Length: 248
View 1 (cartoon, rainbow, N blue to C red):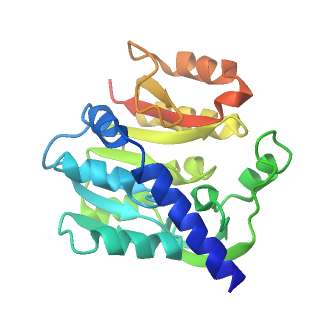
View 2 (view 1 turned 135 degrees about the vertical axis):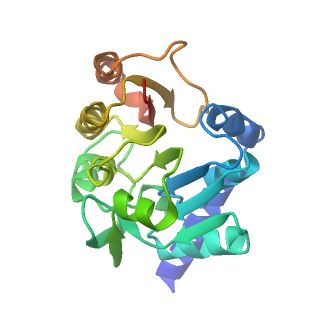
């Protein structure tokens, strides 16, 4: 019963954060409107409670919403299960098909993760002292390539999987038009690996957004070395954000 109460409280917290902020939706639409055209296919890897799904739908995209947490899948099905433009995949994504163990933070499901290294990095980090991962669930895992084979090639992919981003990108053989992936200042090395993977795939232009600002940091798009240097120079208090990559 206590676990159910914690999970419910965590879901309500996420809904309040991601749907309850005035101006959040319009700012998100302006940001993603730079990457998405009406009729595009978009992959949302790590959909959580689906605020990005909502934005992609408002922009007229078809969306594949990928989320392994059972409680979050239930929310996605409640909010978008009847939307013919949204396909919900209750699955994890990694470098190869198989299974993954998701470590769930019931009080703050935003930071649930398939990465033990992420939890280790958070354990002693300032600002993360109250985070607790107290449940696990084993789920099926697929790859980006397999999702593309099933649903088609997207124009844009958003990847936000709490320290598992490099594993997700390792399962992509060919680039799509543009992608974003989350970074955290407690695991900058994961983001650096993602940048290197993007460069290997042919991405040459990068930008970033801090936290939930929904705005790009750099006036002009910059190269891989420049975005890596920017990431290295960020203060720990910056906490997290997203790096965007475009084909040249």
